[in-house]
Amino acid sequence: MQINEEFSNQVVLPDLLAPIEVQEFESLEEKYKLVKQISSALLLVLALSGFFLIAWFSSGNIPIKVLIGVPFIFVVLFVLRFVLVLLGFPKKGYLLREQDVSYRSGLLIYKLTTIPFNRIQHVEVSQNMIEKSFGLSSVKVFTAGGSVSDLAIPGLLPDKAHQIESFLLSKVSKHE
Image (cartoon, rainbow, N blue to C red; front, side, top):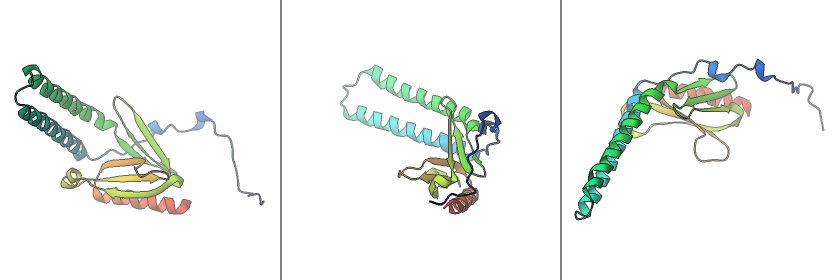
């Protein structure tokens, strides 16, 4: 076995590390907030439509309290989600550094995901129907062991999304 003379494994003290929260995260496009609100509204319309279809075909056996209460609960949940989207949007952002990519989100439940470049297996740019109609894209980062992305950066302009994809892929190729 040959010993690598360049190998180093020095102790890194936590006090000397720059906290990632102090770093300046890039914000998502403002249009993405509207996309999230429209998605919520569509979900509300589908839920209410489904409920009223069930009520229609139940031949009048549903009590009036249920006919009023269930839609009221759906509307309250929609308003709550709407407010959470508004308040939580400024907390969302991404950060590209020399060795990793990070995405943060969350108002009630804070989530910070960081993936080092040497763990990335695949990167893709995607758009769902609503994002496409607003001219937005998402970058999805995959690591080994799953078919679901480990990190997704939504709410990006397509050019920016492809720039990030190219940057990540160039960094991944250097780590192979």
